[in-house]
Length: 158
Image (cartoon, rainbow, N blue to C red; front, side):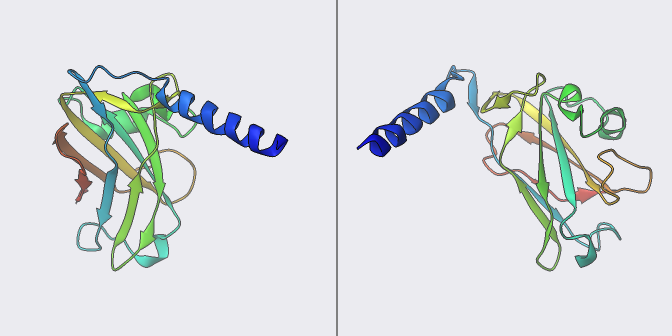
């Protein structure tokens, strides 16, 4: 019986924490998952040997900012500070490198669930050498998308 009570308490606590970030449904929506699709035709880095490497992704509400400039400022330890929302995903190879970012942090490195209803620019890079920062030879991807796009996919790489 004690185990049931403890499990119930954990479940309720998890629900409360997940709901702790309130949304104003008129101006905010849940952050959509960001899909990553990188083919070898897009970049020589998008090959099977890069499976298991990490993609870092940042979302910017200011779509006029330049992804490369913003990515160069950030490292894995402070990536969240340079983007409105940030996350990462591990690459798998299914004919091309793919990943999906589902979990997001805000500029204070707190878990984030909602974003404002506006356009965003997604900036990403594939951390080929696992040092947690963009290096000159690593591939960059970007996408400008509307909040109404329920599964934005980064396919443009340079």
